[in-house]
Length: 126
Image (cartoon, rainbow, N blue to C red; front, side, top):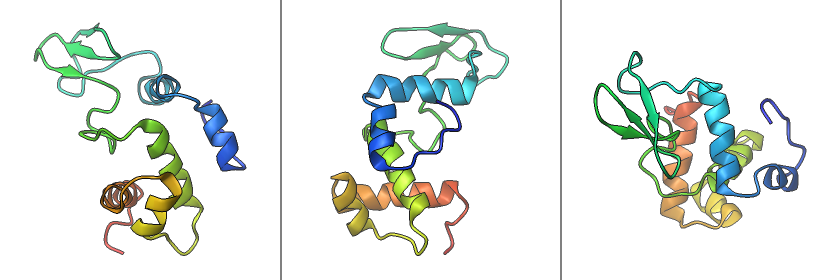
Protein backbone atom coordinates (compact mmCIF):
# COMPACT_ATOMS: atom_id res chain seq x y z
CA UNK A 1 0.00 0.00 0.00
CA UNK A 2 2.98 2.32 0.21
CA UNK A 3 3.30 4.94 -2.52
CA UNK A 4 -0.11 4.31 -4.04
CA UNK A 5 -1.61 7.19 -5.96
CA UNK A 6 -5.34 7.21 -5.37
CA UNK A 7 -7.55 8.41 -8.20
CA UNK A 8 -10.59 9.02 -6.02
CA UNK A 9 -11.83 9.25 -2.46
CA UNK A 10 -13.53 5.88 -2.96
CA UNK A 11 -10.20 4.24 -3.78
CA UNK A 12 -8.67 5.77 -0.65
CA UNK A 13 -11.53 4.59 1.55
CA UNK A 14 -11.43 1.10 0.03
CA UNK A 15 -7.68 0.86 0.64
CA UNK A 16 -8.19 1.86 4.30
CA UNK A 17 -11.50 0.28 5.34
CA UNK A 18 -10.84 0.42 9.09
CA UNK A 19 -8.59 1.89 11.76
CA UNK A 20 -6.37 -1.19 12.03
CA UNK A 21 -5.52 -1.05 8.33
CA UNK A 22 -4.48 2.59 8.79
CA UNK A 23 -2.35 1.70 11.81
CA UNK A 24 -0.65 -1.14 9.93
CA UNK A 25 0.07 1.19 7.01
CA UNK A 26 1.58 3.85 9.27
CA UNK A 27 3.70 1.27 11.09
CA UNK A 28 5.04 0.05 7.76
CA UNK A 29 5.78 3.60 6.59
CA UNK A 30 7.35 4.72 9.84
CA UNK A 31 9.27 1.67 11.00
CA UNK A 32 9.31 -0.82 8.12
CA UNK A 33 9.21 -3.74 10.54
CA UNK A 34 11.85 -2.41 12.96
CA UNK A 35 10.06 -0.49 15.72
CA UNK A 36 12.10 2.35 17.21
CA UNK A 37 11.20 4.20 20.39
CA UNK A 38 10.64 7.94 19.88
CA UNK A 39 12.03 8.47 23.40
CA UNK A 40 15.30 6.51 23.09
CA UNK A 41 16.33 5.20 19.68
CA UNK A 42 18.78 2.72 21.23
CA UNK A 43 16.24 1.17 23.59
CA UNK A 44 14.63 -2.23 23.31
CA UNK A 45 10.94 -2.01 22.46
CA UNK A 46 8.25 -4.32 23.81
CA UNK A 47 4.95 -4.87 22.01
CA UNK A 48 1.94 -4.46 24.28
CA UNK A 49 -1.82 -4.76 23.73
CA UNK A 50 -3.94 -2.41 21.62
CA UNK A 51 -1.19 -1.40 19.16
CA UNK A 52 0.96 0.06 21.94
CA UNK A 53 4.65 -0.35 22.56
CA UNK A 54 6.88 0.23 25.58
CA UNK A 55 10.36 1.70 25.60
CA UNK A 56 12.52 -0.38 27.97
CA UNK A 57 14.96 2.41 28.90
CA UNK A 58 12.38 5.14 29.63
CA UNK A 59 9.43 2.96 30.59
CA UNK A 60 7.18 5.14 28.44
CA UNK A 61 4.42 3.78 26.27
CA UNK A 62 3.94 4.91 22.67
CA UNK A 63 2.15 4.02 19.48
CA UNK A 64 2.50 4.78 15.79
CA UNK A 65 0.88 8.21 16.30
CA UNK A 66 3.45 9.36 18.89
CA UNK A 67 5.55 12.32 17.70
CA UNK A 68 3.59 12.71 14.44
CA UNK A 69 0.91 15.09 13.28
CA UNK A 70 -1.66 12.56 14.54
CA UNK A 71 -0.31 12.71 18.12
CA UNK A 72 -2.62 13.70 20.99
CA UNK A 73 -5.82 13.55 18.92
CA UNK A 74 -8.78 11.20 19.13
CA UNK A 75 -9.55 11.70 15.44
CA UNK A 76 -9.57 8.39 13.65
CA UNK A 77 -6.80 7.84 11.12
CA UNK A 78 -9.26 7.29 8.28
CA UNK A 79 -10.42 10.91 8.70
CA UNK A 80 -6.81 12.09 8.85
CA UNK A 81 -5.95 10.22 5.65
CA UNK A 82 -9.02 11.64 3.95
CA UNK A 83 -8.20 15.18 5.10
CA UNK A 84 -4.61 14.88 3.85
CA UNK A 85 -5.87 13.61 0.50
CA UNK A 86 -8.34 16.48 0.15
CA UNK A 87 -5.88 19.18 1.25
CA UNK A 88 -3.18 17.97 -1.14
CA UNK A 89 -5.65 17.87 -4.04
CA UNK A 90 -6.91 21.43 -3.64
CA UNK A 91 -4.86 23.78 -5.82
CA UNK A 92 -6.19 26.98 -4.24
CA UNK A 93 -6.36 25.62 -0.71
CA UNK A 94 -9.35 24.69 1.37
CA UNK A 95 -10.93 26.34 4.37
CA UNK A 96 -11.65 24.61 7.65
CA UNK A 97 -15.41 24.98 7.20
CA UNK A 98 -15.36 23.29 3.82
CA UNK A 99 -13.01 20.57 5.09
CA UNK A 100 -15.28 19.97 8.09
CA UNK A 101 -18.23 19.33 5.78
CA UNK A 102 -16.27 17.01 3.51
CA UNK A 103 -14.87 14.78 6.28
CA UNK A 104 -17.81 15.17 8.68
CA UNK A 105 -16.10 16.71 11.72
CA UNK A 106 -16.64 19.99 13.54
CA UNK A 107 -15.13 23.17 12.12
CA UNK A 108 -12.82 23.41 15.14
CA UNK A 109 -11.52 19.88 14.54
CA UNK A 110 -11.07 20.58 10.82
CA UNK A 111 -9.13 23.76 11.67
CA UNK A 112 -6.76 21.81 13.95
CA UNK A 113 -6.26 19.14 11.30
CA UNK A 114 -5.69 21.73 8.59
CA UNK A 115 -3.08 23.56 10.68
CA UNK A 116 -1.19 20.35 11.37
CA UNK A 117 -1.34 19.17 7.76
CA UNK A 118 -0.15 22.53 6.42
CA UNK A 119 2.67 22.66 8.98
CA UNK A 120 3.71 19.12 8.06
CA UNK A 121 3.90 20.09 4.37
CA UNK A 122 5.77 23.32 5.17
CA UNK A 123 2.95 25.79 4.50
CA UNK A 124 2.42 27.05 8.05
CA UNK A 125 3.16 30.74 7.32
CA UNK A 126 0.88 31.14 4.31
